[in-house]
Length: 274
Ligand code: HXC
Image 1 (cartoon, rainbow, N blue to C red):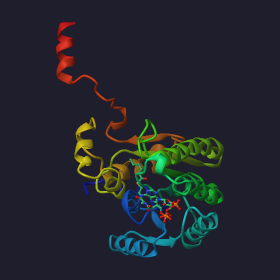
Image 2: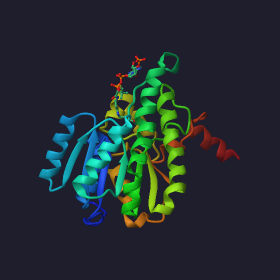
Image 3: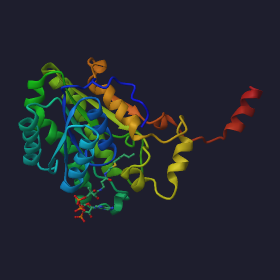
Image 4: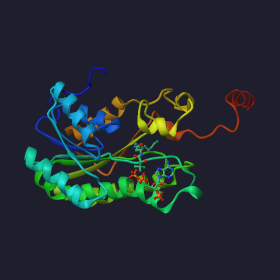
């Protein structure tokens, strides 16, 4: 990991609950929050994974605990919030990162398959945010940070369930930013692009597609978990204290690219003649 551009105590005294924090992007964000002073509560479905993650954090000097639970179930969401507050005394940052994904053409997707992803991503974000409200309000200067995506900005085949879920998260965040701003709760969203070395990429970009994607991104590389963690640190820090309802796209410019119907060399010839 390269040297952090943030002060090591930028989140000192903050308590963060991270859903999906046992693995992947959200694990990387959790580590970054912890390395910058936050105390962590990790939530996920697999207790063993969470236990290992906390043990690793502890070796790095990060204070971390865990609560096993499923964000689809409101009573388990409430349980995770209660566990956080009884362990640390408060909650400042809720990171909604738990997500499900698989490739499936819509005509083959079952109603329950569609619902499963909506329930994990969108209902889970609602459940956790709703359950956290009282404590985030009590903390003041608090943050809900959602992990969305860019795939619903255009039509992404095999992803109708995820597109719908992530679009819902984006809409919900705008609403909550308006309703809960007066209580000192900011609501922000990060939309990562293709991030290397993640379960999402292994599932969504198999067969070497990651190399092709990297070549098409304007910044000519895949994103890293550190790129997303730095965006999260910025949004969680005082530097973002007047930012709410915003979606920060961290994708190297990828979603802006349109398919080139004429190759670059031909364009250049045409431009020379005009
Ligand atoms: C079609 C599928 C399926 C698949 C599950 N289902 N996997 N349908 N193709 N590959 C259907 C099942 O048939 C079932 O419907 C329903 O979904 C529920 O499946 P279960 O296995 O019972 O559910 P569950 O155990 O809750 O787990 C589902 C899951 C899991 C959460 C989606 O597959 C999973 O954990 N996925 C990986 C999580 C992950 O990769 N997270 C990172 C996300 S990356 P029926 O009708 O049969 O009952 C990400 C980035 C997005 O989100 C943006 C990228 C650019």
